[in-house]
Image (cartoon, one colour):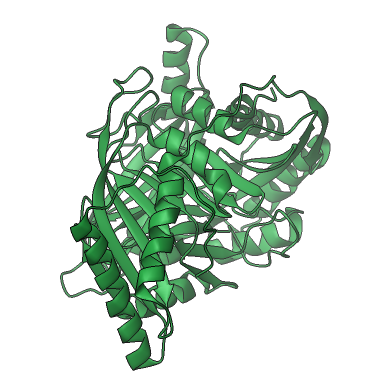
Length: 500
């Protein structure tokens, strides 16, 4: 395990009993590795207090080559991850199944110890691309990358301003600050030759570095865009809409989701922590995430989850059908009524809900969905929204990764029927979406976890950012209306990055 051992001020003090417990856990892992001839994962936990999880992440993210910030709108969970004890990577159409298999295999060789807090063991955190075929050029994330963090922090509800308005969470900007109890978990992949005392020292030092870190960067001037490039260009994209609707009317597929990308180069390096802070404070009802991978960060504020599993209770979300927010309450209500009454948007939404229900029914029981969609109101747009609920049978070995593999991509991301819509996109969309419209989230050893749909997102590297937006097309979609919808969907990330 490669660890930077330069001295740093510590924010973590282990009691003698905790130090002994961590050494004993490392020794048990080394002995298991020696006996089996394979690496073993050591995962040791204790509780700690986090005054401001965001500040901890903002300061510690630059001290490791890998990081995650996750603030859930759905249950108030905050997860911070720094460094990697072990990567789970895969490519191709079966990448999620391969990651799931590798995660299961790793858990068989895991030694857990310490005092569990809110969690149930080490987490696999990360995400995956919309499709396969990522070319591996600099700044591009792997097709599927989940990893076990060296340092993992998890708390049930975040403290401080910008906490999400989810169940059990403080409500939005201005929520009272204060310390939250968190589970601190240290993870290490060991072999039979490792020294337990040195492992303990290295893990403790890494945790000290992360917990002591604070973002001391002075406020920066707002960046100004120097260049912006649309892919495809606006006219070409609208022509693609016409071609897609022609194919829908010809019966090739029922719906397709066409995306576009906006590449922006600014006059200075983009401030990732400032962008995440703006998302936390501005976009209530969204899950905020930031995945740091080398010098690249994929970040977003998404209203949509692909799948959530907690103690065998499963939820997916049908989120399709979009209209802007109104400038006045009366205009907003009128647009909401138009959204709810639109036959075109209702059809687009029903396709998604039907597919989610059918996919969950393959392995779940008690699959239910509301007969009428609700309306989810966000800062710039509002969507038709229908949760789909189900339950995994007691004898099922499936978990959140299995369900994510089955559900992705939903008709809200790719189209329907899936194979025909994706084939058309591969031939016509004209760019690699990367992790946009893929998934970001986490899984625990019990199969619980959450995966957000990675929309309202951007890939940031230095002074450049790639922003993405898409919309669902059906037979009577209008190119001008759809283009305007994508512009509205780009606004949250433009505002977060300060490049409006």
